[in-house]
Structure formats: C-alpha cells, structure tokens
Length: 146
Length: 129
Image 1: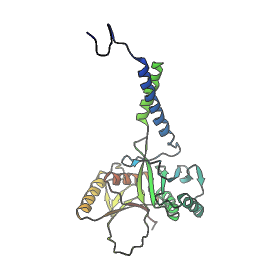
Image 2: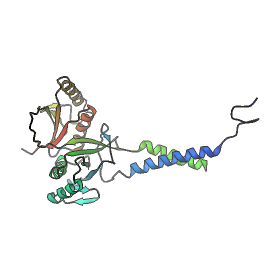
Image 3: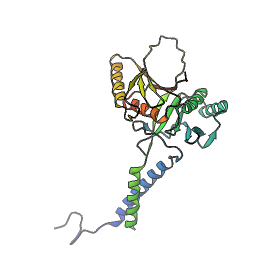
Image 4: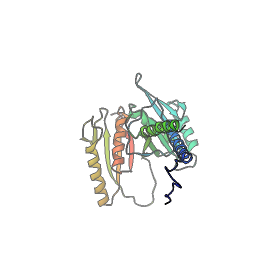
C-alpha cells in the first residue's frame, strides 16, 4: 500500500532545503525587528513607563526634542533630533520648528525627556512648540520598566 | 549550518521579547479659537501634580505620592468619563504640574488618563505663587 507522502518503503525522507528556507526567513524577520527597535533607545535619557500609550508612529511628520537631565547640576539639556539647543534662543528654536512644520497642520512635536527632569523644563519645550504654532504634542515613554 | 542558524534565531527571538518599545501619550496645547457660533463649554477637571508626587483632583488629594499605579485616580476618571457620556458632555482634563514636579509623575498621570480612554487632555506647568 502506498504511503501518503513517503513515496516508498521505510522511513519518509527528511527535507532539509525547505526547512532552511523557513529558518532563514524567520532569522531575517527577527534580525530586522530587533535592530530597528534598539536604534531608538538613547542611553543618556531614561524614559518613564507609559504602558497604556499608543505605539510610536514613526511615519507621521514629527519633530523630536530630547531632554536629558544632569543630576549633579540639576539642569536639563535640549536636543532637536541630534543637534544641541540653546534654551535661551527661544526665537531661533521657534523659527526652526516653524520652518519644519511648514503648512502641515498635522505636524507634531515628540518630547523624549528623562524621568527625573523637572516639569518646568518640559514646559519650556511646550512654549517653543506654542510659538511655532504646533499644538499637537506627544510625550514618549517605555512600554515597560527598564 | 542548521545548528548555527537555530542558535542565531533563538538569540533574536529572545531579544525580540526583551525589546523595549517606545509608546507615546498625546496631548494638545491650550490655545485660543475664534468661533462665530455658541460653543458648549466642557466640564473641566484639573489634576495637580505636586513637587513631592502628590496627585490632586480639583485640589482634593488622591492616593499617596508613592503610588505608581494610581488606581484611585483611574477610578475617579472612569466615573467622570461615564458621567460625561451619560450627560453627552465633553470631558476636558488639564494636568497642571508644579515647576519642580518630576516628569515621571506627570507621565504616570497621563498614562492613567490613556488607560481611562480620556483623550481631551492638556498639560500646563503652574507658575510659582
């Protein structure tokens, strides 16, 4: 009697080639998702936990303000993407944000601040957003405790 | 070769589980809007965040400064949300933090509001008296 797939006597033959294909696809999948997530973590900023927030949408146009906290001096440092900002240059920052926003009403400002940072430093970034006419603000947090 | 691929795949599978993903909590800035028609003023609730971490709802303290889950605040917010739905009114929440309040505490409050499915949230920092 013929077996269903064995195709002959004895043990069915183990197919290695399709298994390697599947493994490679899975490997590429896991490699891609881990690398893309790890790159977003800035080691200088320890984000608070916001487990009920929505997943960050990297496709929508957004400006990113990083606010790191120096525990020894009790001062915050601001960066717009990778560029350090002078917090006293309010007009310059507002102009740059305004230029980035352009005519896009959906443009939003994403704030990534250290969990120890004081609220008044966050308020300063919100002031710049207000000056630039950006009212769509999002605060970043991690999905779980570090 | 299969052994090696298996080991690498297991490594990435474990890494994928441990990866921390960034979430975002959305708010809007308070502002002025000119309208020609009468506007219904929503019920406004102010949640205060003090320097020591104490949370207040319209100046009434809720929970303790060490309470991270803020279940008391969540219960109050859920009740207010239900009441707003029943009366067909809008619920507007203003989170007002003291200047030296920690950002983590502000995020705790915004996270509770997201958990209670309240979207109409503004954030402000109180001027020192």
